[in-house]
Image (cartoon, rainbow, N blue to C red; front, side, top):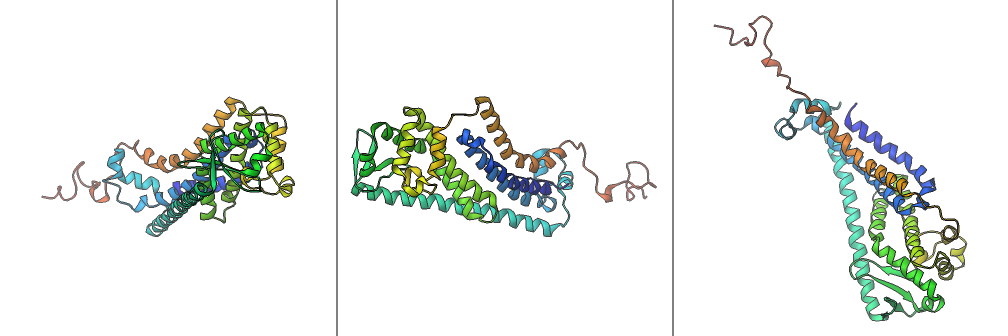
Length: 338
């Protein structure tokens, strides 16, 4: 079977596995592992499509003096291992597919990162005018009647609290929410969210990218909740802060701003107050390696035919050089005539 067909089949299987991962309960027990799993799943699917488009060009590419020398293998055998029906037309379509997917991904990801950086810089300029630094808490306070807490990540990062939030939160809850925002900054969650959001915008139709963006937004908040709980005096202060900062609609299951921006507040509070059942360290490591394997497998599928060709000790001779049965062994028809 063609390597391209294997890669496309692998990508399709990943897309079909996305709903099962979205329904699984273990990511809530290990949010950072869940984030890594979604990143590996989406990146591996894109790699499968791009590499499938590239490998079909090998059968028409002049690899005899290039890739063959690099691998110390017969170029003819490499082309035979990658050969797919359709010839140049399929190779051209594969090249267009690979360039289109890679270009669209790069364009949206670059635009997402640059756009977010421009917004952060503009927001930082506004904060320099209206915000007041609190050196004791290490935060910036903005006068506002609405309680809100959020972080401005990136270079020169800062944590921002409104005056209403500062007045409403008790000291332990305040410590918990600041630890939550610091966890976002340390984990560079803005880059994780930019990646997931860029893929969702680049490819809105496959459900895997929409599911990855939704689940990633939820899991980064849970990961920050876990770090804040470890720094604070248990989960109660953070749960109380979520209730204090969320409006009535958010307590009922709607979306909230700032601290509660990663999805429904009620499930996060239930998770904080419920029994803690984190995954064992060994299970987490096995899961991380499995996600890494999912990411590496497209490269293995794409490279396997070329690597298999290195086991061929000799190249097949062109037809014109094959000795004729009527001539002496080792002589061509031209050399046997005198």
